[in-house]
Image (cartoon, rainbow, N blue to C red; front, side, top):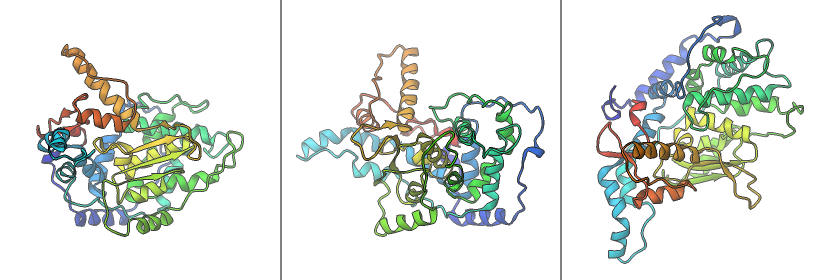
Length: 378
């Protein structure tokens, strides 16, 4: 397997050519009638993520950019650890994140821009995918929300999210749904024509009051993109974090992902947060899997208008996953454990810098500190 640094960087001009070529090619939308009966595949946790990263490499380059952002060079890491001492010697307050670390870690190139473009083909593919969950009929019934949650769990399991480590139980009357999804779901169509597709289809089923009684009024992605341009019309700071107090399916956060590498979204609807997370994996990987040293990215479940502490639906799982890996290694090597209870990503980052928690050295280069095995994306 090639290391991340051995893979040639594809320039934006080449990607534009690939997208234009593929959009001219005919696309066959699969449905139930195209399924192979009794197909059996042993789907492993995370099986879909390498496919996603490889397709994205030739269309947008967002996952390659994410991987480069995750690895802090060894000299920058050393400088960051020395920051408290240097601040004391220079009689100043320590910087939470020294500019040197940012400059040495972030790629010189700007964030690869996604051009949002709706496609009836991609929307039909997604609709056909959801139609494959019930054995008979369509998904837009009184069980629509149950089918949607099943699909989101199935997809997030495929993407390797640590909160979804096992395949979900198939809804009643949907036996074999996993293999039907496996045959019909085509993420390349969604990547070729990026859009907030879940935000488009969910208003149609929000009237199914047999399961829920909550309205959903999404912001169109074209409007979200305009708002993002207004907000970031001046010089863009990639490390600046933004907040979306009613993120829904994540349209505003998707638009802002063209400018920022971190952001926090909050909503009172857990299903909508799962929808946002699913779409972040497709289009904004740094919002799906936080850039660990920034520590300002999450999806929160709770009412933004209340003073109650919201529940983390994303970041806390990634940090716990990493700590579990490190803790297991320390037990095997008979090292005194350094793992403590995870409280919040901000605390985690500070404890890493202070030496209370240890990042691992990325074997792809031997000179970078990271939380993730970046060779998985090579």
